[in-house]
Structures are given as C-alpha cells and as structure tokens.
Amino acid sequence: MATSNAHDLDCLTIAELEKLAAERMDKQTRDYYNEGADHGSTLAENMSAYQKYRIRPRVLRDVSSVNTSVSIFDYTNSIPLGVAPTAMQGLAHPDGELATARACKNTGIVMGLSSFSTTSLEDVKGALGPGHPAALQLYLFEEREESKRLIQRAKKAGYKAVFLTVDTPVLGRRNLEIRNQFKLPKHLKVANFNRDEDAHHSADSKEDKKKPDEETGANQSRKRTQDSDSKRTPPKGPITFHTHAPNPTLVWERDIAWLKEICHPEMQVWVKGIATAEDALLACHHGVDGIVVSNHGGRQLNGALATIDALPEVVEAVRSQSKKIPVHVDGGIRHGTDVFKALALGADFVWVGRPVLWGLAYKGQEGVELCLKLLSDEVRLCMGLAGVTKVEDIGKEYLVKLDRSGFMSRL
Ligand SMILES: Cc1cc2nc3c(=O)[nH]c(=O)nc-3n(C[C@H](O)[C@H](O)[C@H](O)COP(=O)(O)O)c2cc1C
Ligand SMILES: CCCCCCC(=O)C(=O)O
Image (cartoon, rainbow, N blue to C red; front, top):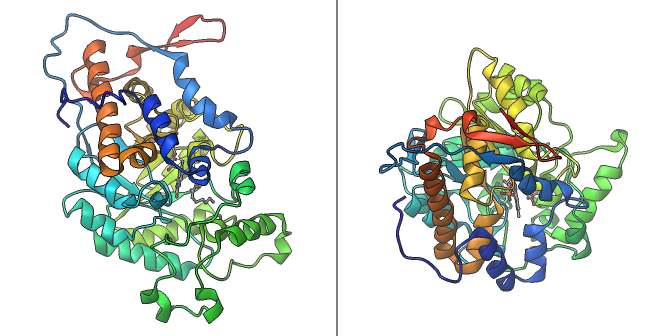
C-alpha cells in the first residue's frame, strides 16, 4: 500500500477511529463489538501487554526504501496484517462485509470472513475478485452436513483456507450481550445459512425455517451449557451463532482429520484460538497448515493470557518441529508498533478485528481503508525508524522486555 499524504484530520489514530465509530453505532452494536467476556481483563491485557515491550532502534542504515510486504497464500500482501473474521458486519454499516472486501482489495490485504457474516461467502469473494486471497473462518457444527456444504461452497468460490475456530467449545459470558438481549435486526440475516437454496438438502421442519431468533438462541445456548452431558443433543432449528457456533464435542483426532479430508488440497486448514505450546505441538502433530494465536479478542475465557504473552511459547514449540508451519497472532493490535513487536516475537503475520469494525461503522468502505492505511503507515514508519527495511529482518534483537519494576531485559 503506497503511503499518501492525504489525511482524514478528524481521524489520525485507531484510538480516534474507535471514538468516531462509537458515536455512529447503536448501543447494541457498540456493546456487541467492543465488549470482552466477564470483567474484560483479557480484552484489556491483549492491548496493555504490548507496553511491556520497547523497541531497540538501529540507526545509520539506509532506510530510503522500506518494503512492508509479505507473501501469504501465494499473494503479495501489502503489510504483514490481515482483516480478522468478525461476525455480522451488517450491524456496523449497510454495506457490511462487501465494504470490507472492497477495502481489502484496494489496499492489497487478505480478508478473513466469519461463517456468521451478513453477506454470503460467494458475494464477498466476488467483491474481492479472483486473484485476491480470503480465508473462511469456520465454526464446525455438531451436525456436519451444514458445515460440509459451507466448506464445499468456499472451495468452489476460491477461498484459500479454512480457519477452524477452536476457542469456542462453549460461548464466553458476555454480560452486555445478555443484558441487551442481543438480537440481529430483522433486516439482517446470517447469509451463509438458512438459505432457500439449501432447503432441499435439509430435513428441517417448516417451523425451523423461520427467521432465527438470536434472543431465544442466546437462552438456548446458556441452557445447553448448563445441561448435563447425558442430556446433550445437537442443536436443532434455525442456525444462529448462539445455538450452533459453540461446539463442546470437538476433538483433535477426529475433527482435524475430517476437515483435512474435505478441504485439502484446494484449501488449507488452520486452527484459530491456540494459546499454549502443548496445543501448538498437537496442531503440528495433526498436520494443520497454520496456527493463529488468539483468545477471540478476549471474548471467550476471561483471565486467559494476553495473546502477545502466549505467542513466544507457541513460536518456540512450532520451531522445535521439523516441519515449520506459519504462526500468526491476533488480539489487541492497535498500532503499527504492535505489529512490529508481534513480528519481533516470532509471529509471521497478524490479524486485526475491532479496528476494522470501527472503520466500517465510521465510513463504510472508506473507513475500513482509512483503518488499514493508518496501520500500514505506522508499520512503515516504525520499520524505518527502527532501521529495518524488510519484514523478514524484524527479530527479537529489536526488543527489550520491561518487568513490573521497570527493569529491562534483552530477549
Ligand atoms: C464483534 C466480533 C465478532 C467476532 N466474530 C468472530 C467470528 O465470527 N469468528 C471468529 O473466529 N472470531 C470472531 N471474532 C474474533 C476475531 O476474529 C479476532 O480473534 C479478534 O477480534 C482479535 O482481537 P481484536 O479485536 O482486539 O483485534 C470476533 C471478534 C469481534 C470483536
Ligand atoms: C461461540 C461464539 C459464537 C460467536 C459468534 C460470533 C463471534 O465469534 C463473536 O461474537 O465473538
């Protein structure tokens, strides 16, 4: 992405973007997008943990040409950052995921699409165009047929990878969502499911094909979590994120093999939501194509480690294996220097969730482009000021870590 001198003077930082977006979203949307689980301490630490690291800049190196691009899915991505999959973008702006896709296309940035998008995966891929890479985030349902159909559609549409979300065996406790009795407004739908085209495949009753009621879904989800194992049955009825996304039955052995069988070779299989070395090793053992270190933006297990703190052990575990797979990270990235720090700690790439939603709420496609341009300019500036001209040269020698008393240690 070329650096340009044209600025939106109302919005020069992601922090300003957050404020501008907050003024434009209704309460239900703002709360749904911004909240973390329980007390929100993991959400807050995802961001604050970056402050434990300081950059050691090098000087008198020719930085007249800084190349921020990296290769992902055989595509030259303009910066080492992608748009993380976030559900129901139609809440932020009428153009929803289409606006995000157009912005990704214009800025040369890979897009992750949530299974629970308000635009169909085919329309999103159409907006990105044939050469532009996208990954479909997957919630693997207990009842497999619907998931299988979704994967086959993604393959046909040209998605490069499936990101299986593994940090949602049950729904995290989001108190504002509960208090607001979150409901998808009537004019929006989860566009990949409950489609008329799928009706002939489905044994759903007529009753099941009514528009999903998210409020009822949230209650069902809570009830299912409280039920004892012996009473478990796969969720029935219309597909909502509350009812179908959480799947407590998923296991490494059976489910990764099943997914690889369906996705390979056209689409890669990644796991999103890894936070420990043990699970990183299992991911390698089960032959996944990549890992995203994530805690779902602090929306699932509150009290979990900040992702930048989980990253080093995951990187070390993966590097101990003979076959190296890429390690990406998301959560709390709000500035180009955060991107630099994550890469210095061993991430190959980062993904950004809420800032993109704020851009979308602020000004649709233009707002998402603004968000991506701010981060891109900051990455380029950080690299130049740190004395690095290529992304692959960013290493741990560029960081120090501060402990609680402010003592610094080299990594
Ligand atoms: C409103 C919202 C919706 C999300 N929806 C999904 C989703 O459908 N699937 C998923 O795997 N992750 C989802 N995430 C998590 C993101 O993919 C990502 O892990 C997280 O937003 C990164 O943290 P950040 O928002 O601090 O950048 C969602 C996050 C938010 C904020
Ligand atoms: C089991 C979590 C389902 C939530 C679907 C959307 C999402 O990932 C999020 O709100 O976060």
